[in-house]
Image 1 (cartoon, rainbow, N blue to C red):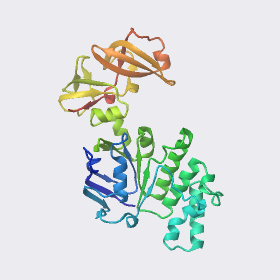
Image 2 (cartoon, rainbow, N blue to C red):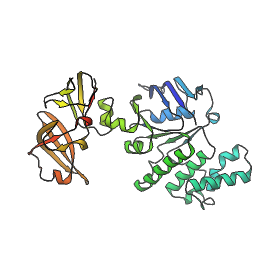
Image 3 (tube, one colour):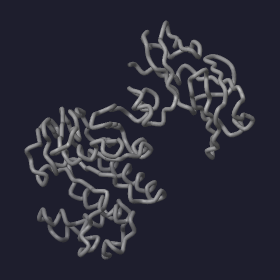
Length: 344
């Protein structure tokens, strides 16, 4: 197990107006799974390649357990990367692909066969070792790529969008497999993804990268319950942002005073709450407005509501939303523990 530390890590490509990665600093805990999350072009894959040693930083440091590794070549860094495409050798059998790293290390053939069989059992590929990669499904190819990476017992396992080429059903299966393998082996694992749901399901902690900079680094629940900025909240589906001031444990705004959780200091801020935390009715922390939009979403119905000049969104059970139509006035409440104030 290895702790990975990035200190002011910056990568600027030639002729680029802005750095691809801008002074990224964070510590990836040993033996945990960290997701590097963000939209396309934000710098997350650049960060992964820098950790792997496939590219060199413009400035900054990378350390494994306190040892700087930026000057160590990729093949000696003991950080193995699994790419979006499995990149299996087409002329080798699946077993030969998985055992290739061990062969390069001079491991005896009998020991390689034993370790490959054990790894096949872990990734649910038993009985497929004699096939060629072209004879496997997409999910099976990705499992073989995982097995090839894990069998050499790397200090750090890096996965670059490993599920993006799979259909929804296979993505669910592979998420479970990756999570189980990480817990079983204890390897420090870093997964790059643009899918917030994937990051939340997989990761012990998430590093959200926006425009090359670290926006927030925290456990998954914090991005929903305590987003650091409005941009972070919006990336995780936040839709409700009300300007106002905190005074004496209340949030004062045009919509009225709202009770807040304990411990929020006085001062200006932006109130946010998740649409699914609203409840129809009048009571503590009541708000009311006019329905301006309604959308059935399967298990829930979304209502767009205007409170004065402030648009908000709430998600209700279908039976609660059924009587409401655009133009109706509706009252709803949000409990204090479901409110969060973002500071300027």
